[in-house]
Length: 446
Image (cartoon, rainbow, N blue to C red):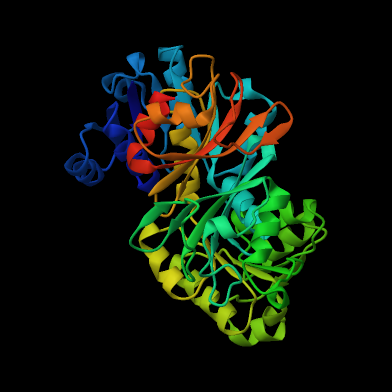
């Protein structure tokens, strides 16, 4: 497949790098240093120039590309790039990255408006991920699959957890939940019945939302369980606004802190069920006065990351039950984690996952990366030719070249938990975990 990536900032660079091993990738950017850096790391062709111009797109070979990705920092340029690519080559699939939510809303309601096949908005995706984590108080990462019927959640097993030290086969798990992988900083292990769960390691779980939530409640003593009701959002940018709006839709009444008076007034008018506080979210006296210690969840969404880290650590030290931070620079993620922050959401990673979903050779419904891209959770629809269809899974999996775990199967309206004797059918949607290094081989085999 020929892929043309226009704009190689952090998102475009990551996408180009991920695709270069298996596809022909052409990267276009106005910054020659970015192109030199990318070319030194990956096998890509590069062209210097403004990707919104027709002659640059033609030089990059958009007219015979299979996929064109507009990933510059300007929304309008990305939309123009994609619509021009469609005009040059009607069979090309186009993806436009946008920051402005209004573009995304218009495209969602009227797909023909911009002549773009797929539009991805980082702020909306980030806010959605934040709200999903809020819905599972003990989780550090949450993603939904199968139109919301299946959830993937990553938990940290705390010291003193009732399950710490036990093997999986002794846990008496519900049939509607599967433990699929355990991680620490150095290793990743696919879960077996004999796997012993250790404190301070991270555990990946897939299953029905209600059962995964119930399992999560088993990780901590009952006295420490607390439903997320009081949410405080630090930062009234687009991510903070979208998060508050989605929380309102779920019946919550969050509070939101914004330093700029004009923006605070605008937010107060847009968010009727949110308490908007105009102040500096890095002021410890203000945070203490407004009861950050009573918050079930603090969402820190300030910019830049350095200021966001200060607000996150202050919230933790002042007694917030859980702190989730939005981190834009992936290099800072370990700093936030080492500082005691409970969960991290990276807007760029959210966008990268959405884009890469459209580059797989087979029809991938959804993909999410876990543990710094060491593993993938993928949803695919099985066809009649799949190795997994028509015979017991314990026989079928022997023909797949690498280990993987089927976490759940969605068949029509039902969610099934796959076992060795399960027989899958064409049209089933499977949610599976696989090591990222062998993901393409596994997906091709099944």
